[in-house]
Length: 334
Ligand code: NDP
Image (cartoon, rainbow, N blue to C red):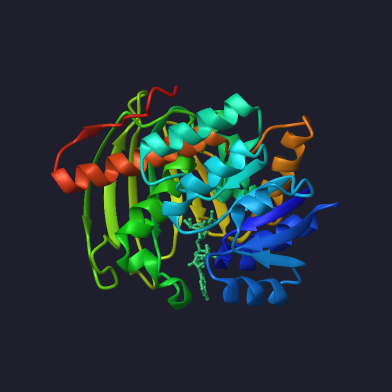
């Protein structure tokens, strides 16, 4: 697969470029940025043969099969729509758009063009999360009663820009982290939250956007979900717990970008450490994407998954803003 990077971003530099190159035949053809100087510097640093600011020229290039969009959030929609119109396969960062309408339009456009469209929800690619989902599916904890996600971390200094002070770029912990929780919860429980209630605050880093949020979600089955997301917690650790009638699963340190952390299953028989395969999450995501383009599989998280994670995050923010319990609007997607 021959890729163009749309956005000279940190996530591409730290994870996705190497994931693309880890797959046989995977190449990064060029990088597009709003700044010619930054694009050239980035290309040189990452051995990318071409760089520029003209997205339409890149999209007209028949040597580009797919684009990876990792710009700030407000650019995802126009860039994805342009790529879809040009017939390129799209691997888009979360949140898909700033609004539900944007996300729905992107996904419908991709469907109508018959291109592969994926959302980069890396956590569902992790061996740890796939092992947990398998435990839940096999009924090892019985009927699920509740799930807690603790994703209160300290935002690393090199990421402390637009996320903390620019609502127009999609800043705030909810579009950044709650969207990942939303996808993770859906992935493990196999159902979509019906209603949410939330509170958010600025607890030290946020300047005009929330840097912390706690929310409670009700699932159609009656399962209750609690999510704690923050940019300001240095020592809280991260993880999830799923509690059922026959057991509990503790996933410690697994809400991360790396294949780390441990899983414990506790039942009436005692405690057991659950092994899982260790591999790079982003390489798995690109591998799944490649398979989908080749017609031999499906992407890890598709466009509808991206719509739903955004829908939940938007409902959480609206609930926190209005102080009311809200029904999640999925834009007509089931
Ligand atoms: P960055 O701030 O690193 O990059 C975003 C944009 O900022 C770049 O596309 C680039 O703009 C500009 N930029 C960054 N560094 C410089 C610089 N030194 N000089 C000039 N411009 C610069 O954001 P992230 O990589 O952290 O996030 C990008 C997207 O990826 C977001 O949508 C985020 O939500 C998502 N993300 C997803 C993760 C996941 O695991 N799924 C993890 C982290 C982020 P330009 O577009 O003009 O090149």
